[in-house]
Image (cartoon, rainbow, N blue to C red):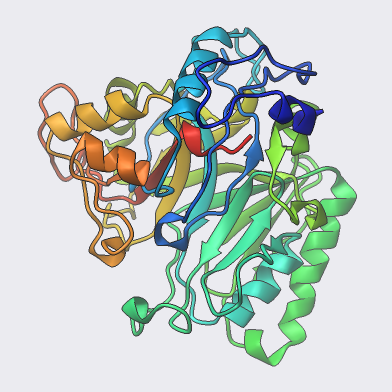
Length: 402
């Protein structure tokens, strides 16, 4: 049905945007076709997706942004997406259980980028979790592992990127939630990870598997480089929202996991609330307090994904070069607000691929980057309000290929 909708949609030159065709009962289709001639820093292959901006309940908090994207996008598709975004303000019940609110500007938390020491070790680990390698990329390039239909892990190693030689593996400072269809799938993934302990490449690593928590239907896992995961059963709403009904990459049907549900980032005491307010006021994200010292940014299809800021006394706020990638709908205004505050960031690691410092350049690369978070009231950085917690890679919505 989605392919039929795409076939009836507009093309790069079209100024007309037809009504959605055979739309999913929960998601309203969004037409537009992005012709891709390359991908920024080899970051992302196109998603065959019809992701709408929706009125979804819930909240959004803060995470720290490095934004990159594809190098070209058709103007006609952009106009079509913008019109569809205005027309598809549907109301729906969020997976967070709140009442419906205004549309989120966060369309998708798309990938995490974490340096590893060995591509082969990373491949074995993520496949054990139920991910599948994006076979469109040769093994000589950064490994992209599909995590369900829409999300990925990107794991560059010194084998395929000389820039990070000697830098070591990156450890995400928080917990990464992976969603599965049922308890059996969770247990199967945990068993596959545990079996890796018998392999020579994993001996002496941080690989570990916790006990099954029946009350929460989850199992905790530590990856070989110390990254922390929680494998959890997805409820029905999240299974639909993060499943192929919202779009999919070729080869993702081989995954046994549903997708990346939430990413928690541990931040210094006193910084979660002002950080979340920064994302609300500067990027137009919604936010919600989950607990004292814990705020969430909610977005993705049907508000199925969370970026959670969780204060920790052990957190220094120092970033180590990792990044989160996400799609946003309010691309131009978000860029301008960051530019006005002097927060646009060019990552020297990826300058050969994108270096947007003006809106025109951001359009050219279909992306921009930032990583500093400031107090939106004063504009000042401080030990608690300065981000540098992690960077986030945001893609413009017109890169979601119908």
